[in-house]
Image 1 (cartoon, chains in turn red, green):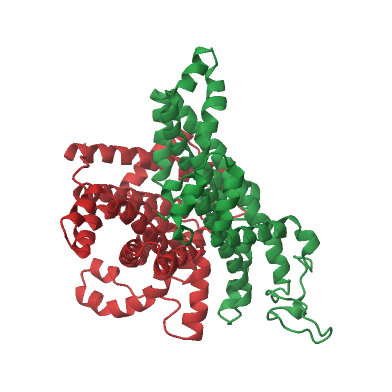
Image 2 (image 1 turned 90 degrees about the vertical axis):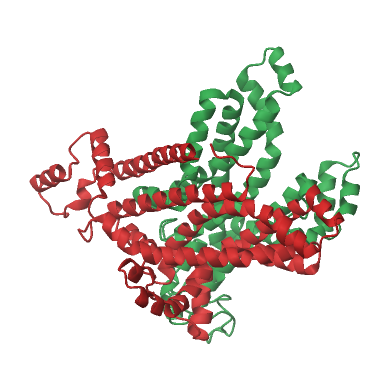
Length: 325
Length: 309
């Protein structure tokens, strides 16, 4: 097991090098990045000084190694606009983004599993057909459009839920202020519902279809037939025998899912003015603040790798047939 | 897609009789099911809109008319007494229906081209990896792992920030985002075909590797890839819309569904729903139609999966 983790960590390091190399090259493909840091009227001497100060005069391989060294120390350069450390800016916004992503993940999984099971057990009925048609529609709705429509209907017309803003839960926890975090939960949930649905609907629909097809697969297996012939009740068969095995592909998906949800976060945060990394990135894009975009990309990639590693470990727990090693 | 699965056994039996041609079989199974037919009609309409945009659109997509800005859908014009802008106008007085018709061009072109780029790249690499094995296989599959470890939209954002928006930047970016799926499936299929007699026969007749890969293996690995390709057109259209919505997709002079939505963001808080509603509806219907067709195609090509969703 520990050998497996060691190998996975090594693989993760290779992936991180790949990702950072890619983002590093993209930054330099755009031309000499020095010009991003100086004003348009800067003299040749000023430009040269800035170039040397930021290390852009050195050969690319050396710059990349310096960049990796900085990454190891948690330094990914300065944001061009705000002149603050880019990585710090991303980390400050991360709790809000995680709140949203985790919430979306919870609702998409918790709702999808029972829906998928019901659909599988009622296979071929109009209930099943209806659920699957709705799931298909859910997979076809562009998230940002759903967000805008929710703002218009639930937010502006019905005035049921707030359409923007954020009540922090993770931040007070990080500051060690648990009471404040607990007191914030109701407000936080109110603000989370609309953006959470916006991000999570696609995954919810896909997971429901996945649970259904995986349940159907399992229900046709011999051991289910055996359980039936032993006279076990359908409830026991579904919950005890089939469900656990049907969950395996869903757990596999969860890792990739996180990446999906993070992608959704980028647009959804913009729509709901959510103060997270997604909106930070979008603004950084429009301002061509490349170091800031790069920092966010690296942070997202690292999170994605960690989550996938965790998912694989859970996966092995769930399915004893899988031996990690 | 389950509505198709209401009576699977009967279809399965009638389909398996060998004397019916594939094309006839496809037509029969299509018309047995109502949703795919509806999807096909929607899809044909969208394609028609895109191809004949210049002929069928009532207005000029970029003509601004500030007097008529933000007209409601179906609003009767005071001067002419007719409905001038059937879906209303946007914040610059441009006809929304015309812009949506033109938007179909970019959405479909980008969706299909991205799949072509990704498919060519992925299938080529996948077949090479599967056929050659060894180190070549290792390198290609490690590349795939690196890409899978990275949320695609971030890569797309980074590349487009640097290269700037534009259809010709968007297509390769979206294509590269898709190659892994094709490569993995093509590789698996190739490995299973590699040792078959017909490949062996071709090799013993002295055919070169490239010829074996193109003429013997490629036709035999295509079927599952076609299904993946159809779903990927849908996801490329969604990705293009998201990127255009972020202002990264296509320059604003070219009307795209995502772009129209992006421009309408300011009007939403004022309760002007139509400039945001209709382009999103167009995206949803098109993507839904493609997904339903893809589902039907998968069931048709692999009847064992029917009703599994």
